[in-house]
Image (cartoon, rainbow, N blue to C red):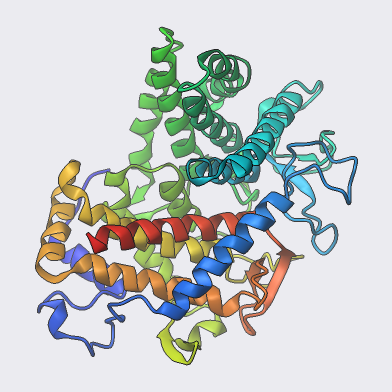
Length: 473
């Protein structure tokens, strides 16, 4: 992506991200109306830690086998245990890969007993993947979006194919294969050859198809999230193939995809749009402004993409759009353990959204997206602190200068905490998470115990923990 009008645009973006005006040193403006508290609140930290534990437990609780459903195939991951209003009791390829990627992140810190439990779940997931990859008669092949929990194909009407799913699955299993390579190279090679390669060959052959569905299962076309997922999977596939003295042309396909990503920057609108070459599905998303662009960068983007002008501008546009859209955003502060805490914006999917969690009327804020905005701020701040180790664009170098002069990373931490506090406000007191929050009342709506909501919280929490560690050094 090309940088543009650097200094002036970045000034506006930082204001939109709730960072104080850059005209004077930040530390001289503790009462600036846009300046968040510099120090993370201990009450928020206590909730984050408790929510971490609860989220881990309920992610594992959503991975079969289940005592309540002996027909569920081991390794199948339900998007939610909800079976009516709405029925999310299916295993989506995308959601499952994101969840298992999170589970793999737990391995390094796990004690021996817990590690064995996690490895059993991972091996079950690999077994489930082998099964669905080899099902006969699938109309969309490896691009099928979801399956019944007992491993049967879903044959109802649905938006297919969803080709980001195989890319996420390939990346997740390559991550596990890299761990296996340190202890069992033969097992790692078998996993790559038998399970990962089919997904890589599939996306290598299908990525140019403009009729695939987006991650919200509503629009057909060429999607930023899908292409970035496919690019990263093919890049990592090429790297792993090289360690095995193989070359299947994955690197060349990844380069071709990379050359297409620049077209998603819309200079006139001032943000990265979500879909190009729209070929069908939802027609009401006239703005083409969508939080899945943010999710794409968090899940698949590079450090330079994370801190690019284009991404900063897109996040700023999203925050502004949802700030004025939902009634709950009129509440701008809350009390945590007797202390007032500023709140970030409750974030939705896209401004024109009409899915209400169990039908259509008006869209609502989503827990997983609000957690992701918190994660974005934490990771951006962490990148500022480690920028000397990597190459960056000129505009990011300017942010690094501001960090050294005024402590920008500490302020980004505090802004991230505002969004984390927003998640706290709308999460049940028993830590139960839903897919959505009612736009007017703030109470949970839609699927309960949404696995992706727990996964997004843990990703944000991990980024926050790493940032706090870096700031303490």
